[in-house]
Image (cartoon, rainbow, N blue to C red; front, side, top):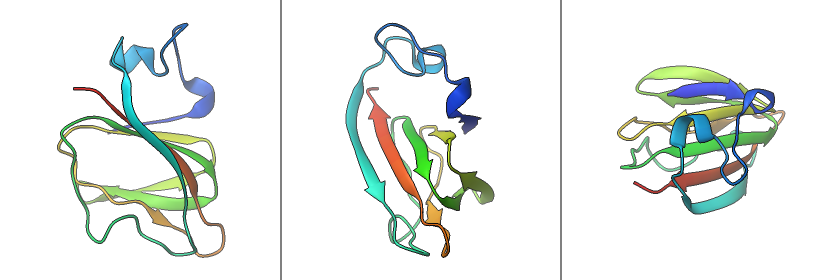
Length: 104
């Protein structure tokens, strides 16, 4: 897991997070608006590729491999292949998250 903030991202002329992913391309993406106290997915899950979460609004937490990391607006989390994770939004300030997955 990599956690940083949006103001610390490095990018090339054609790729976001170039320092981590080089020339890998984004294969899926979206924006999700959480409801208060909502958890993404029924249970924690894993991916075979990197998933990047950019939090545009709100607060919450993301447990990764059993360790819970607090989230706030501007946080960027890279969930690496095989890491068990599930995002959880706060009650008072729900999260809005841009997400994308990288090619293998």
